[in-house]
Every structure is written in structure tokens, then in C-alpha cells.
Length: 470
Ligand code: C2E
Ligand code: CA
Ligand code: CA
Image (cartoon, rainbow, N blue to C red; front, side, top):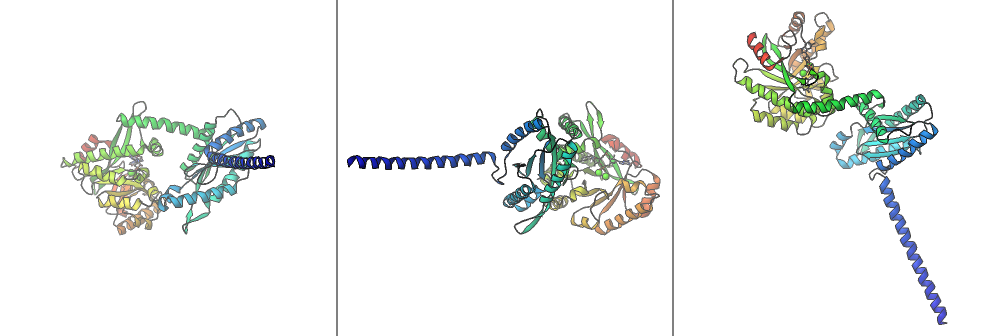
């Protein structure tokens, strides 16, 4: 009897132990699964993460090589996410990312790998695109269109509809010797190219993009050096009103140790892309202030105004207005003497803080001119929303103004609206007396600028020319 009880007890004990064991094993398995899940998934969207994506890409390269079939990596980057995120807050931003993740997923096939690399950057791995490159490109183009369309629907967050667009860069592969990092970089730079070309589109990687990227890299390094070595300088072009020089536009030049003088057309765009334009612009502002102080001491130059060009990137950098005010205060530059020339593209960014930055600068006494006016898309009525003091009519309208009636009509219209809004008008690129005469028959009070009155000159030469002209 005792034996029987003992046996029963032992059996129960064993049962208990094995149950516990099972429980612990299940627990472990769950933890294992959870850590495993976390290791390869993006926490916010539940998509795969970079780690998993790269593992899959490695496998995919081998299989592409084996079957001689194309595969591709698509880099998808949202165009305006930052603006929406800043305007709505992170919570709404996160919600939007989740929605977009879902939309992308539903536009893809089960076997495609969709990952989020962080921020608003999504990546897709597509395999089995066949052996014909053209056909692969065709399929991918269709897929990219589908993805763009799926993102492009209005997304409702907090009862508001947000229109999101994206840029896609695609890199193809069919060779296991290709480097993973290279493929990712190619897709990334193609995406970057899509942004550069105006966003909301798809670009396939090609060697030209790589070349441009290389050039950008070299340019970035030499711009950095150029700043350190003080290779930049400003030249000054007169602005004339009623036959008198009333101011100047400062234009940047780069005296490169190897290449000699480089005009801005060859480096400003790169400087903007690499954001090097920010230190360059700050340097130019200091230079302009020093020049204005110098002119203050000279009775012949005292009243001159100075304009400097300012890229949208500089203008939209947080704290730009404070920086400008600090620098102007440091030099003691009085109201109305310094003018920033900005372009229409800046107004078209619809950046939330743009008007307030412009307003603060304007209240501080900085003048704002709209450069190259007429080449962008902003309507005259739209300008009313911004504190703009001066319209600079683009050179392309002045070029044929002597004989082209439609240019005359256009300039007349611009001048009349500008007058209504209380803005001054500058006609730029005036090269001949015929152009000048036509301009003056259209408008009495107009400032003119162009080779007819003087090419941009280094500071001393400009000053001498002004003194000679009076
Ligand atoms: P922009 O602001 O439209 O400057 C006017 C350009 O037209 C200048 O070229 C000037 O030299 C040229 N120009 C002036 N008068 C005439 C004329 O009668 N006929 C012709 N054919 N051209 C004339 P530049 O100096 O090569 O500058 C090109 C552009 O580079 C500028 O266009 C401006 O957008 C940018 N830039 C220049 N300096 C700076 C700077 O300091 N910062 C920034 N962000 N951009 C700058
Ligand atoms: Ca300008
Ligand atoms: Ca201009």
C-alpha cells in the first residue's frame, strides 16, 4: 500500500515537473520568438528592418547569379514628410508612417521584401525579374508607379487629409560579385536624383548619376577647403536709378587654387545640395556688412544699398532670422541698407514658418527682393502674402524687350501690379541703350541693372567706378 502511494506521489511530482518544464520551455520559446521578431522588424511599422533586408539581399544576389535573373532594390523616400511631421507633431507623423507602410505592403507581392530603414525611408527588394534587362525595367516601372499611386492617396490623420508624394530610386542587379553597399548606394543616389529632378518620380540608377555623385563629393571637399583658405570673394554690380548708382548686387566668385576663377553657376547648385551654401552664405553676409560699414565712411558711397543673394536652403535653416539679426546688430547696419534676393522657388515651398521669418527680417529693416521674377510659377496675387519690397524682372523678359511686344506687355503688367503693392521694380540684364529706352517708356521709376551700366567688379574697382560716374 505504502509502495502504491509512493508511486502515485512520484508520478504526480513528475507530472508537475514536466508541466513546469513545458511551461518554461513555452515561455522561453515566446521570449525567443519575441527577440527574434524584434531583431528583424521595425518597431513602429512592423515591416522588416535594415538587418533583415540586408540578409535577404545577400541571398538574393546569390540566387540572381545562379539563375541569371535580375533583381532590384527600390529606395522610397517621402518628399514632404518632414513638413507634415513638423506641422502635426510626431504622433500624427508616426500614424502616417504606419498608414503608408500598410499601403506599400498591399501594393507589393507576398514574396517582395519591404523594409523601413528609419525615418521616412522605405526599401523594397524584388526578385525574379527575368533575364531581359529591358523587361525588368518595364516591370519595375510599373511597380514603382503602383507604389507612388498607393502613397499618393490622401491620408487622413486627425481628421485632416494629407497629400503625400515620394521619390523612388531603383538599382538593378544580376551578379553576385556586386557589393551590397554599392547596390544600396546606387538605389539611394538614384532616389536622390529623383528628388533633385523635382520629386514625386522614379529614377533608375545609371553611371551618369554616379559620376555626378563623384563630382559632388569632390566639389564638397574643395568648397570646404575654399572656405578655409578664403578663396571666395564678392564682386559688385551697380544698380542705377535715374542715371545715378543707388546700390549694388554682390555676386560671389571663387578663386580656386587649381582652376582659377569659378563662376557661381558652377558651384552654387552643389553647395546647395551639400548644404555648404550655409557657411558660404554666412561668410557672404559678413562680407556685405563689412562693405556697408566701409561705405558709411565715404561721402560718395554712403547712401548705397547692397543686395546679396540668398538660397532657399539658407533661408529655411532654423534660426536663420536670428542669425541675420545678430550679424547686422554686430556690425551696426541700419534699416533699409541690406537686401536679400530670394527666388520664387522659396515661396513655393509653402514652408509653414517662411512668412514669419520673412516678416521678422522685414520688421528688422532688411529688404527682400524677389529675384528672377517671372521664371517661376507664383502669380502676382500670391505675392501679396509676403513682405516683398522689390521685384527683379528676369533677364529673359528684358532681352528682346525692344522689339517683342508681348515682353513689353508683360513688363508693363508687372510694373503696374508692383506699384499697386507698393513694391519697387528692378530690370536686370540691361545690355543696350535700346532696351533701356524701351524700359523707360514703360516705367518711370524703375531701377536698372546690367552690363550697360557695369559688369560685376571687385570692391575697389566698383568704388572707383561709382566715384567716376558722379
Ligand atoms: P542672379 O542673382 O540672377 O545674378 C545675376 C547674374 O546675371 C549674375 O551672374 C550677373 O553677373 C549676370 N548679369 C548681370 N548683368 C548682366 C547682363 O547685362 N547680361 C548678362 N548676360 N548677364 C548679366 P553670376 O554672377 O554668374 O551669378 C549667377 C547666379 O549665381 C546669380 O544669379 C545667383 O542666383 C547666384 N549667386 C551669385 N552669388 C551668390 C551668392 O552669394 N549666394 C547665392 N546663394 N547665390 C549666388
Ligand atoms: Ca540676384
Ligand atoms: Ca536674377
